[in-house]
Image (cartoon, rainbow, N blue to C red; front, side, top):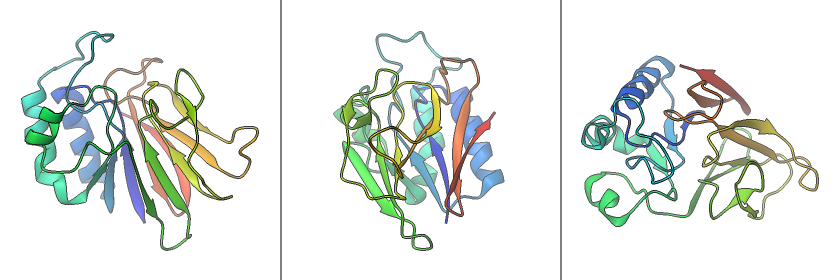
Length: 180
């Protein structure tokens, strides 16, 4: 199973197009979106190419392959224009090859307690994966007290805190960051 994992597009058609281009190259089984898809949010500057309507047009054709969760900037109107579910606080899937549970969250309701994410964990077993966004900072580690569970943040597609726009790839049980 191959997943392309992205978070925090924040309405940037410019960076969303780069994400769509990455999907065409990577050919993942699923595109995972960890929230903050259309709106830039009141604390953020407008991202390059801010055009939420164009982001809708870019993502909706991929709706059948998208698994998403709600970020702190999502609103009911977002669900009205997107053809995939985007309002769940969390989501999960199981890799049939490794039997790992992959838990998806934005980081403001369920999070590992890193870089301004909340510290609220789901029940996971050793070997499972906790994906989150929200902080705009890349993470790929285990946390004391939760040994055996990998915590992964793909960074931000459009507004990274370290100026390196990125996404993540999950393949063969491994997680990696990819810079645009």
